[in-house]
Every structure is written in C-alpha cells, then in structure tokens.
Image 1 (cartoon, rainbow, N blue to C red):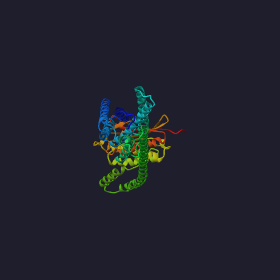
Image 2: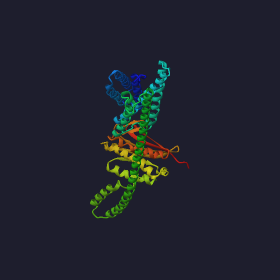
Image 3: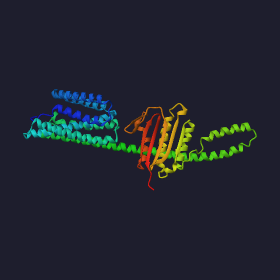
Length: 435
C-alpha cells in the first residue's frame, strides 16, 4: 500500500502478554508464585511464536492465528488466576482491546516520527516504553480500583459474549484497512489507517470499561437488595416469634394453674407421672431469657425453642439494656443471622454434647461487644477477611455475614469472623453513643 510497515509482531505479542499480566498481578493466584511465573513465561514465549508466524504466514491464516493468540491469553488469565470462566472471558476482552490500543498508539506515533524524518531505534524504544507503560499503568489503576471492592465480577455467559462482541468488533473494524482497503470503513492513506485503528481500539477500551462499571454497579445493587431481603426476613421472623411467644406464655401460665388443680386428684402415682410429663413437655418453652431488651429476648426465646427441640445447648450472658440505642431491624439482623449460622453449624455435629453455642453482650471501653461462638468440626476458609461458604451455590449464600456487617456499619461498627481451635466466633464491635 506504499506506506510504513505494520506493527512488528513481537510488539503485538508483548502488548498482549502485558495486558494479561496486569490481571495476573491483580487477581488471586490459582497456583504458587513459582508455578505462576512459569505459566507467565511460557505464555510470553507462545504469544511471541504465534505472532511471529502470523507475520510470515499467508493473509488467510491471520484470523486463525489471532484466534490461537486469544486462546493463549485466555489460558494465561484463567490458569494463573482464581476466577470464574465467564469472568476470565470478560477480562480477556479488556486485555485484548487494551493491548491492541497500546500497540496501535505506539506504532502510529513512531510512524508519524518516521514521516517527519526522526525515526531511530532509540525513539522506537522510548515510545514503546511510554505508550506501553502509560496504557498498562492506566489499566492497572482502573482495574485495581474495581477489583479491590470485588474480586469476582460474576458476569453471566450472555454478558461475557456481549463483551466479546465489542472486543472482536473493534478489532475487525480497526484492522479492516489492512485486509481490504476497498470498503466503506477502510482508509487508503497511511495516516488515515493508523488513525482509524487507534481511535477504534480506544473506543473499544472505553466501551468495555463502561460495561464493567455498569455490571459492577448492578451487582452491588443486587447485593444490597439481597442483604435488605435477609434483614427484612429476620425482622418478620422476629415479629412472628413475638406473637408466638406471647401465645405460648399465656398457655404456659394457664397450664401452670391447671397443674395445680390436677395435683388435687386422688390417684397420686398416676397424677404425679402425668404432671411430670406435662411439666417436662412445656419447660423448654417458657420465657427463659430476660436480658433487659425486649427485641433480644424475643429473638433468644425463639431460637431457644428450636435449640431445645434439636438438643442444642444455647448459653447466653447478655446485658440487653446496652442495646437500647439500636433499632429492632438491626438487632434482628445481627442476632438472628449470627444465631442462625451457629445453629446451622452445630446441627451437623452428631454428638449432642458438642452442640454448643455461646452468646455474650457487654460493654468495654465505650464499645458495645457482641460475641456469638459455636463449636465446629468442619473446614472453614477465610480469605481477605471474608468467610468462604462451603455451600454449593456460592452466588446465593453468604449474605448472613454481610447483613451483620451492614447492620453494624450503620452504627460505625465492624465485625470480625475467626475460627480458633474448634470454636468459630463472630464478634461485633460498635461504639457506644455519647451521653
């Protein structure tokens, strides 16, 4: 076409590898540092080899060669990072478009310098460092900000395919002039072709960045909705439990009076046997917990009923009056979810004597301390301060802990989850209001 040669293929390979390496640095590693380093080194060699052969192969092998390069990039991200398959596909789209943009911008600037008579190996190296360094530093900063808040993007396959369409579309349009200059989207002059390629690649990067921001906003919104749903359920359970406890207490006191009358019967042996059975049957349903806070009492007595029925020992030492500054919804979220998690854990233990739960509420140094502990014998993983669920559907679980954290943060508080020995504890720390 009578113009400066296209981007050196080794430059393209370097750009593709650096884009993938950004995500390898930011995301959680799947393997050890040594294995990850080996994987990255092999990836660089493979990309360099593929791009070299693309440069010397016939034009009709260009698309198959790029598909192989994309496969290597995807493998680098997926094998080196602990990510979902669809997430790896989306990160691939961003990495590929950013690599194309960096390589295109670098070579456009150098081509312009050559046309002005300033071409040299030194300038080529400087522009490579500046353009690649700037592009991939920008990618690092943007993705670091996004991935700090959330490791898993959790895009659907449909969303991943949408990102792929954007990336592939931008790539094809930006390179169409090199394949066929006789199309409405092709350029015919050297500067036109470089400009079209750089501009389209940049547009692709911006579109994918906007898509990622939008999806993460939607995910955050869905998470807040799920937390609110859990909180609302806990509050509804509290309201229902309060009504049930009032009914049970009335029945309990009625039975007490009935028992007193039955004791006057003549057949002492049968009477005592019958009465003992009645008393043992209703003993677990009396208002055992009176902490000084009506909401906490309702929650505890409701959970106590369940614990009695399932042979779980719930031990409570709580100064409920210290909770008066907190609203009912927050108390339901914190205590309801913490106790539900503890009950669910100890129910898995076959030995009845090991089904132990301890709850404490007290103040220390102007802070309200809430501690819920339970005995456990299963494997628990904590990564980045987050409890990793052992349930199969990870996307739909774990909101109990998040609800507790959300409720605590409404009062500038914090929570900590900690397995120590055979005891798992959830600790909530909330500053007491002044005055």
